[in-house]
Image (tube, rainbow, N blue to C red; front, side, top):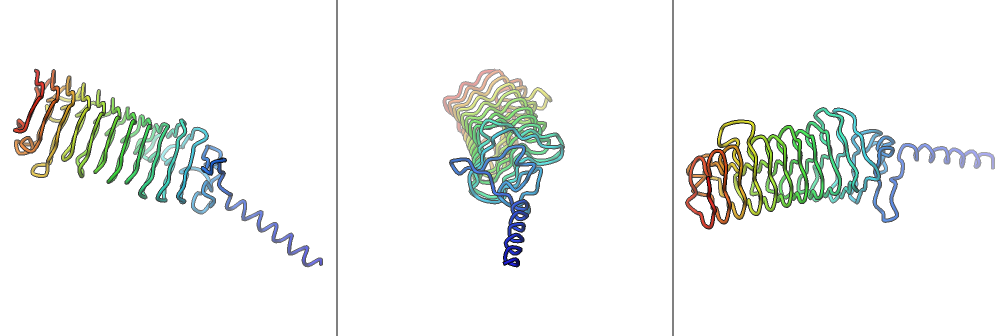
Length: 304
């Protein structure tokens, strides 16, 4: 009996130690795993201190839904959240992930089919949010190096990106919709793959508003960009590049008050492969076009 008692006590002690090593993830009533500053510092958000050591970055290694229940304050040169599993949703829940400077990334999503929404990421001198085949919705990204970087088949909707020391949104094969991109060095750079840029406001960026090679720019306001510089291409509202690979449709936009040209082309061939219709192109310092004139145009209002 004495030996059995000792065995039970030893087993209990072992289970206690294992509990300390691998804390259970804290789930809300609806099954969503909660993340806050205290849980980040304790580690083991997904149940393993090996996968998610104490402190930042919080590392998510299991598919599922996660929700912030408070702001996260991240030390300098350290990432905020790393998503290392597919099919993960992170609801920022109106809270903010604040970086302490340095070259780290606020939220880094390398697997596919993930979603982040509803909050703010600020103060990361590397990247604010980076994702592949990721949906980014209703997020404010401020004072980062590059605000948002998307890999192939991503979407960015209803986001505000401002104060980036580089590019606001860097997109590849992505759909950028209903966003405001303001007061960055460059607004949107979408020169990889085929991109759709629809219903955005791109304003006050210090170089070009939009750079694109293939795809669609539609229903957007591109205004007041290009204050830093005099070159009509690099300070244009929309810059279309890519040589023989370029193929763009520019439809139903207001392109006005940019320091350089309203629309700049890297060559006459690029201009010839661009279709323009139903745009208002007005009051741009470098004129309506630079580098060529599109041969496919209809319904545009072209004013000096």
